[in-house]
Image (tube, rainbow, N blue to C red; front, side, top):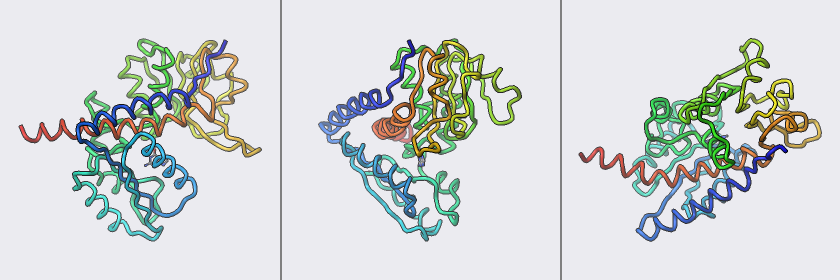
Length: 289
Ligand code: GUN
């Protein structure tokens, strides 16, 4: 029987745990606050931002909302980020991507204080992950690790193949699996004989951004398959990078789309917001010493 990994249930569990932690902080007089910045009115971004604010409300995190017009200049956005970096009452800063073309995304992400970078996109946090130091970890790959652990799937010593090498998912995913003592291979669009590589995987994480590209020919019998993709198929139905109906019967466990990895991203963002309190405290102690 294939185990269907329920991201909705696991993300709800995590949010409930965080809600308790936030309540405990509040008893100590600590309030957690996330600033969310959206530039323009891209409909997909508006949905993501709304869901992030809703999750904050559920958990008890205060959210500050900045909805800036699409014509906002890079200078104006950088100035807002600077102002939020300097505010002691703001723990996390999130700039929703994509940004309009007049704004250099990398410049803005690098301007966010690494101590408030709850998306885990700042080079300091990526570097910290790379050398095994504490820091914020990109939410989607961190969510995949939680899905595996909370489903009783062990990573240590197993063959893990990540398909995709983006800075937001593929690369941090490979580093996290390595941190869990997996034997990790990163495959990508230039990989020769991709099927031969993916068929080695005990744990296959797919983040290629191509609808239903992964069929059963790419999967070893009994593998665990994690699908990070989300698309609309020709009937406007949500689907992933994996052709679920054909692949699932061959897996020991698989994530569905929707309801697999998707709900985990926001749960992990919330987790980063809660962890920001300790990260900021530790950094204050370090600077004071
Ligand atoms: N746009 C799509 N996904 C994300 C995300 O995880 N973080 C940010 N900041 N923007 C996004």
